[in-house]
Image (cartoon, rainbow, N blue to C red):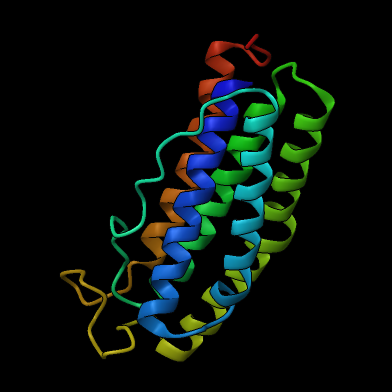
Length: 179
C-alpha cells in the first residue's frame, strides 16, 4: 500500500503540473481548466492517506520539469493516453489487499479518470481534430512529423499499446499479487 500511495501521489502531481503547463501555454482551455482542480483534490486525498498511514510522500519535482507537445490537439491526445494509463494503474493498485479507506480512494480516483476525465479528453481531441483537419497545430506547424501529419494517431496507438502491455505484464506475473 505504501508504494501504491507514493506512486499514485507522484502521478497525480505529474498530471497537475502538466495541466497547469497547458493552461499557461494555451490559456484556460477545457477540459484542462476543469480537470486541474480535480487533480489537486486527488493529490490531496492521497496525501491525507500518506499522513494517516505514516507513509513518507515522494518529492514533487514536477513543477518546471514538464515538456508539452507542440499543439493543443497533441495535449488532448496525451490526456487520453494518460487517463487510460491512470485507470490501469489504479486497477493494479486495487488488486492488492489494503485498508478500506485506501480502497475507497483508489476506486474514486479510478472512476474519475475513466468515467469523467477520459471522456473529457476524448471530446477535446475530437474538437481539436475537427478544427485542425488532421494536420498542424495552433501556430500552423505540421505537428513535427516528417510527413507533416499529426502526432495524435501515434499517441492513441501508444496509449493502446500501454494498456495492452500492462495487461500482458499482469498475465505474466499473476493476476493477484501480494503487497
